[in-house]
Length: 309
Ligand SMILES: [Zn+2]
Image (cartoon, rainbow, N blue to C red):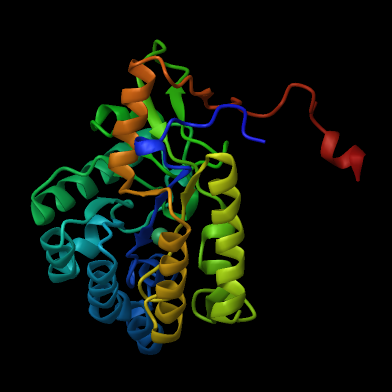
């Protein structure tokens, strides 16, 4: 089904990249800038991520001999440096997730540049390494994100959803050849739709059982294993870091390891491998030049919406 599977290292059938977005309470401040401080219960629910979830996830990774990728907003790294230090100490990748979880597609190019730079500097200072991977808060990758990220020296992104295998993203403003390696995300591999239920965040999903969620995630894994794709999840330490869900995660990791012929890697390792096989001529990725559109479609003449209703 996948026309151009990647030649994975050691003949692996697929690549698996476990990623975590350590949003902590940044999302509450963004949603309620004037009174987030009065919402202590939600604050505590979100701070569970760096305080309880991250150390538990790191212990689990150690048990399974795996390295994961953690996306951290710069502000969260400043608030919870210990969590970031624990990630670094255990050899995990620390990547960027905005500064205060601001939405890039709602910013001007200059604003996005400012916040991306500020976030990058914060992560570099606390982790000791400049982040090379990026996921936009809420996957809200903007029309300017490609240029901003390339100017900041980023190598790879996982905000877009345009394929089953890694591909390249280029900016229409630049000559071709300057690109980000895209490790595509998909909502089926996000824990938010399964579990997040909170009035202050305006998100009230019926809470799925860990078993149900695992079925959704594993269906994607078996599909990628069968057809040579990449499996990139997006879990949150405050959410999947809870005990019952971590039991599910351990079961899932065991099943994946038992299946065999799987390359478990960080996002950066996969992006570097993709660059290598492209240079060697053994992989021809699809290239998306973005943005796809500029402004309103000419076909939608003024008044179209009114007429169509
Ligand atoms: Zn996030």
